[in-house]
Image 1: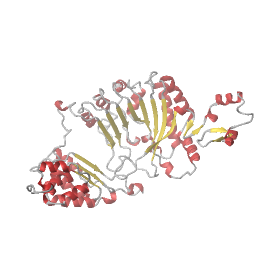
Image 2: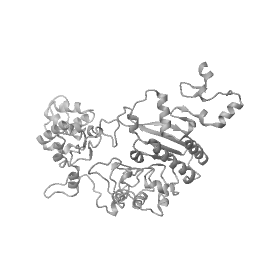
Image 3: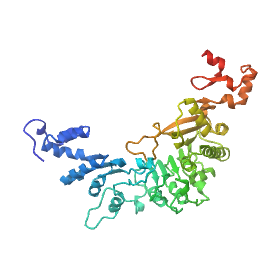
Length: 478
């Protein structure tokens, strides 16, 4: 480092200059400061290189060239995110050599373009697998090569966990998205946190060549060991999500006679999200409701992929299952404000054609997704089990009409959740009130009160701007 200047800002000692640099926001400002003189370059470069985001292969090549020209820059990198679209992949592989030398790297985020790329969208053979060789990277971090320093020395290995390491980490949230989940691995991981609060296990829904899940039931969540693993965080787990993956790759369940009891042992669990295909749903239906449960959300994503465009059959499965769950399996005492939520996933059906008229779209959604009689029955039964209980139905959608699959990557649109029904507005589906059609008692009361004249039928009612059915005379008055 150069010594202080005789006058001006550079006459300050390095410690004061570093405090000033700490308050500089943005990479561009830091780069400009580093370019002013040799002394500032030496002080600022660790800040410039501390956190990097790589979005294109061209950017990766420039970084590789800069790292090659000055070795100490590698030690400045603490946080690296590699997030590129498939069309910008050329050159990304130039980072592989330097990744193995980043001795102070604490956070590594690698996005592979598979499978949300143009090839997948257009049905073309996919050849865009990640250019980052993370398999060898992780292997070298556990088994160092002869004569080479350990790769990623700050990475902690889960391969061999001693008793002293269990219940020691501060991890509170763990999310697995589109993964080939190994239950033995999950069992080890869940033994580490002191108090895990949120756990989301998303097994692979979208199966491609060379990424099929194991068909060994002992390795999958069909194993009785799955519930044993979850029990390791029974004292703290508050939110649990499980999607069992593509139904064509499900393995047979190793039924645990004590499975329902083990699920009930999650005494702190308040929010549970399950796919209809999840093996945990079986135990939930066998009196396995955790005692503190406030919300149960059922997900159709796995059975939806298997159903194709047959939304009517999909809806029938969902409503039959929920009706029997509430009628037969639900505890007769539930938490106040208990929520039962049915969430439909995004469907390609709605991208086949476009309906301009909002009312027609609402009618179509109601016809395809809803068994209204079953909906009324579920909502009514819930009210008898819990004070102010709610039944909610929603669907996932992409506003642009172009879909993506999780995990959602840089530049991809995120889905939004559209409310289709809530039991708080008992008769309304997708914004349209069906009471005049479905509530016979109400129609009888209207007739008795002479509010519904002889011969006046549904065809002689009109809808106001909100979609509410009103008499033709009232509509004209408004």
